[in-house]
Image (cartoon, rainbow, N blue to C red; front, side):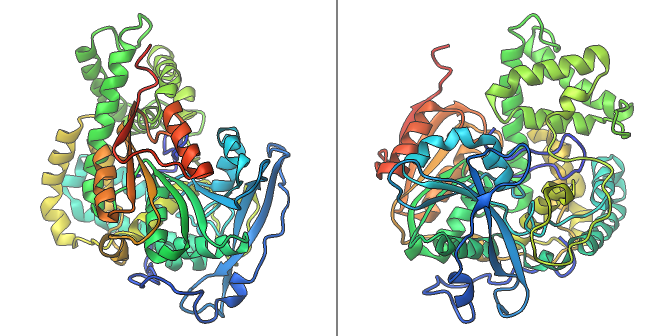
Length: 523
């Protein structure tokens, strides 16, 4: 799943509800037959569980850590600690079920604490476990300071097409600052390494095979794990299925198109209400949204955070509010508050980042305290992981030559989200090429059947990605067609929820190509 790279309040949202020297070690590796040389001590460990620290942590949630090599090519050297958390099984346990909530850059421990009630049914058969991946949350978090925002502000502007080289220089400066702030984990970030961490976790939890539920980006991680460790896969569900093949530039266009469709659905719903801040005519409402974006870009609104709220910040807030139909009433009220009172506070509540970042550097591989996680970590990790996973690096000359054409293409895809998503094609400039393993090696998997859930109205991971990924996976893939709205299906569709639970708990798979109707069809 792609998201705007910003540390401002209207940044991104995980599913349910990088720098110079960046290289992905382990890319292109064949399926593993065993831990590998020097890895025995990591596979021999056991998690020591205790109560989670923090006033807001549920009392039933337990926390621990798993230690992994910083560099799998040299496992005898530095290590990293990964934060893990679990809800204990209440019924007869099949072992652990690992969750990844998406991003990339989403904190698993915090999400499990916040959204644990959605997964309590699965404790009938599993310890339900999630984790902060390397570079994320408490697990040696990466950071970029303020340079990325400066570069992307430049990329958002009209001057980018007129002087693309100035934008590219800003992006190179941002890459260097990411290196400075992030510490030794940055060159070893990326999904292939996280998949290897996942296998260490599986063994540390005492499971012979992996049971897994991955949302959005988490589907990419699950697919990579299945390609890397096919003989260790048990029951696996991928919900909101990510692409394995499209370059970031194409993902940005798909996201812009998906979010434009979601916006139009939202406006059709909103304009049926006399209180809709965009009026009662859907066509005029679409024009009004564009006018608001242009107006705020020309004359941003001051905020309590000390930074102005621009049109692109407004677009970012819309993007987050459109992820789920359940958020639409709150989004409507937030927009009304802005348009009627000039108050951005409710729109800022869709944020997952912050402002005014203090400098921070990672100096060792131990867990950091929650209050010490850099505020820009979600966006910095998203950028680092997506760049590590993508092998395409157009030259500066290519970008300069193509930027005007790309800008027009993105704006055709969406007059609201096009510019906002164009930054995706620029964000990895100045960084080494990522792995080609995901694009070239994750296909024709020899695993047990896995369930892929695609949602027709998903604004972030288009339904066609589910079908394309299923075709690449091969005969192991079973597709469930969710004919609803919003990003992913498990948290928004009762039908999807039931079918996923039935598979994970009892091994009961729906027929390939079967569907779930929208929960709102009867409204």
